[in-house]
Image (cartoon, rainbow over all chains, first blue to last red; front, side):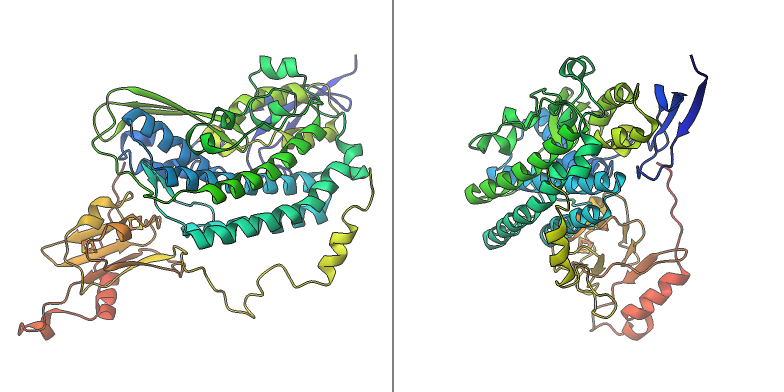
Length: 361
Length: 145
Ligand code: SF4
Ligand code: SF4
């Protein structure tokens, strides 16, 4: 047996914009064990729930993470609505789905760019981010914010989009879908990328289930699970929804699954815009959250997020807790790293699309 | 499998317009809806205090006795709650972001007395004066959560 060395990876590393530290136990060029260490950006946001009005707290949830911003306000609002028995107007549900799917597109494009950058394809990186800019422009035009939308609130949404503007958005999205196709073709067909991705970072379906992996990471290993398929909220209005899966379970499969999800999100937005009903956009909640507990789940770009809230009859909540996708997926990431080459480590970490800000709150 | 799969796209990019906005050669044009900062038409304000109570971060302070309305621009998260709640629509969300601030960022506006009253000149200031005033009479409100 050769000698073992420990190489520290992160918390500052060029491949990841967020801080995660790994101790890589190496045997020559091979990783035998990866020990993750989290907690560099813990901000104690969950605790703030005791000092913030439950209606105002939605602005805190938005700030948990910049990329999943809308998703967190959506998930929190949905959970509180369920706890208080609020019926959300249908138009608001449609608008929420439209914004949520837009944020999925922007998250996946961002990730595709980062992935391209990590295997040295600068050209593709810039092209993905250029497309993403169009989604951010839609956000800014409709809500006034590029990253923090402040659009979703308990009982509905804060902004309406008029139907002519929605038609414009539908056209932009169709064009975006057309323009994304060559990039996706490059990502899934290009020889140099395939050489790099196929077969590396393999996770079997059995392991994915055992480690409770969620999101595109699990779906790339053949686990057919996506919260959107249960039709909660506006998703119940979709004609059909099928999770995008792959059975290969390697880095290549994870890229392909996200590419397919991007195209699927474009279709969902266009379908929602075609079918959106007229009506009010907000149902003002009355009273305070009751002394009870509530649970909500949404499918964020990175996977399933579980929200837990506990009310105590006052306008402040007793407890708020989030289980984020990355806190599940870190277990799978450690599994991927065991036995891989040192040069594969950045890519294996990146393809699970970790979001450390969400995980540490 | 293919190589050079982005060749066509790259070629197209070479002959198309730049993707970025050519700032500062072309001026920056924000969207109409952009949330930059909150401004007030103090003459219309009825000092009801609704904005004060609805602000999630406590950026607005309304003091009825002094007829003053003040905002801490650095604390404001531009959530638009105050603008949508104001009963007389005297608050507006401007598209320009606040300039970088050094030190305190509280601006205070004092509601001018109605025109008929004689002590107008002595008491009330124009908006600029009020802003000037703000720089001197700010009170640091550090409230631990
Ligand atoms: S809500 Fe409007 S009228 Fe009332 S104090 Fe605020 S700015 Fe003045
Ligand atoms: S925009 Fe929001 S944070 Fe800013 S002053 Fe108004 S209510 Fe407060």
